[in-house]
Length: 172
Image 1 (cartoon, rainbow, N blue to C red):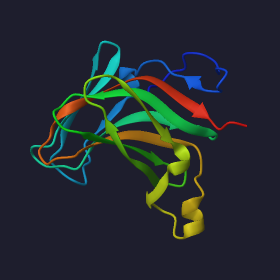
Image 2 (image 1 turned 120 degrees about the vertical axis):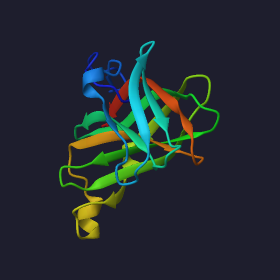
Image 3 (image 1 turned 90 degrees about the vertical axis):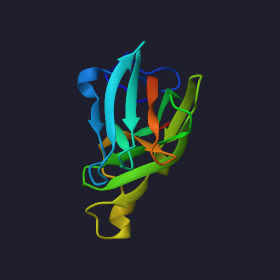
């Protein structure tokens, strides 16, 4: 899902395949509005690793994953968690107007790699500069996106691994 740098042209499914995460293009966020979270981005066996520690507070850590051009419909990737409890994953995106949207509710699987997908038509407005419902409903492309990792339990410590990214354009 996430990574950056084009690997090839469109496939028959009209998807853009992406190379593995590249260190210089992935950024870390510690959810500064909720102090206490700690985190680090690392690389292990061809996958990006997002380490997190919520023992001192915080609500999330995030990994900046790039910009989506107009027409992108889905962001998919392979994920696995590395801690004893579930890890919540969300996709957060900021549009060109400065409005923030989210898709919440996916869980990183424990153990084996599992494909997960974010359908961009499910992006819901959360906060931003728009002052009315019509403006909030109209996403202004491009979108700058982050993958958010949130604990399902207080004080959770662990990691999430991501690899094999694909951005899929709108079919048509």
